[in-house]
Amino acid sequence: YPSGVDEKLISEMQRSGVPDKGPQAITIPGLAAAWLELEARFCTVRRRELLSYAISLAENGFKASRMLAKAVSHAKRRLDGVGGWYSLYGSVSEGDTVRNPQLADTMKTLAEKGFEDFYTGDTARRLVNELKKSNAQLSIRDFTEHKAEWTEPITSKFLDYTTYETPPNTQGLTTLQLLRLYQLKELINEKLYSGEHLKKYIKACAVAYGDREKHITDPRFYKAPESKLLSDDHLSHAFEQPKPLWGIGRVTGGDTTFLAAADSEGNLVGFIQSLYYSFGSGVAACGFVFNNRAHGFTGGVNKVERGKRPMHTLSCLLAEGRGRRILIGCAGADLRPQLHASTLALTTAYGMSLEEAVAYPRVLLATSGGDVYLLSEAAGVKPPYANIGLSDAKYPSTEVGLVNALEEGDGFVKAVADLRGEAVALPKPCKGS
Image (cartoon, rainbow, N blue to C red; front, side, top):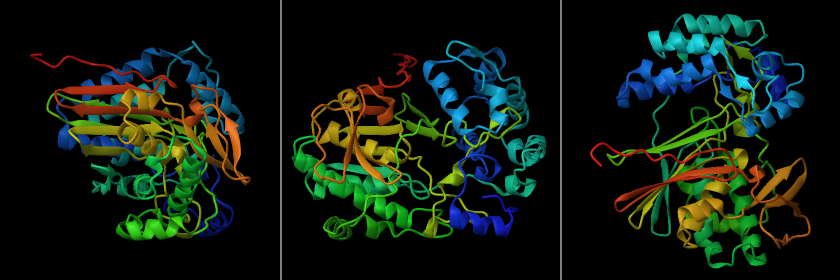
């Protein structure tokens, strides 16, 4: 969170929460810093060539899809009174040509000067000056001191698979807890969406999301006891204790993009990015719309503080075993751990192919306000408890998230795009094949 925010305002937001729009919702953007690190360590294509496609789209335009038009429509209601995003995208309808010449110019500068210019050069200074006009308190110091981090994944076991997820401040730990509980409490032995299956599923979510609220935040401020939280003793004990269901959230039409790629050398890449809600904070500068990730600060260990990153929803799951490597990512906000865990369980314990698992009707646990309910694409689902509601989502529904995945096996790579969204799976022949 920006270093120059007034302490009185910080205290006020610790009591009442960080808004989901406007200048106070912004954290220092990290995507360009990730690009900088990836370019230095792995890139085999020149930066100018890589950015040329994005520059062309921003400069020459692209046709607005149905989902983009829907996101604009929803954002008009949420971001009422925040003007920056609207001047860029607010009039977009399905089929319109969308152009952003400001963004094209900024990307050209990054192509010429390097991604570091976003944080230490002319681009950083222009961003800060424009953001000040919207009363955002991001400073040159905030940009200069921001660095991407290389971290070790957290790991666990599920059946014969070794599973890997991203560490805090992401909710990857929640995914691995759910998978361990699937096995420990034999959810995978129950008929899908039966009463007994749903009872165990709800209790597993109560454990995993309860721990998320207690322990997940910026590890520089609080280090979650990952080994303990993933231990069978902790999970089994917590499963038997009554727990309130709160803070799970739901899919609210965010803007997450998950890209999965594989190459002929055996590399698998999962790359995920999001502003959080559609069009983030609504504040724009240099053609960019800025995130509203600070809304991810809640309380307790995850309270808002200067220089701190909030718990955020993005993560990616890798599973290795039985001669397979499976990479799963999604647009799913707070429901992401459920989507990752259920997709992997379907393609392993339930014997489905990866494409069947991604397409299979979903039943997820969600909360909204004080209501707890099952969000169901499947027919005939009945909540097993009187205090759990039911919300039907007509199949195929974007309300239950969008999952994309890769699988590498003996002599093949499979790419799967969720039919619920607008993703595509694109094979490209390798040289010499």
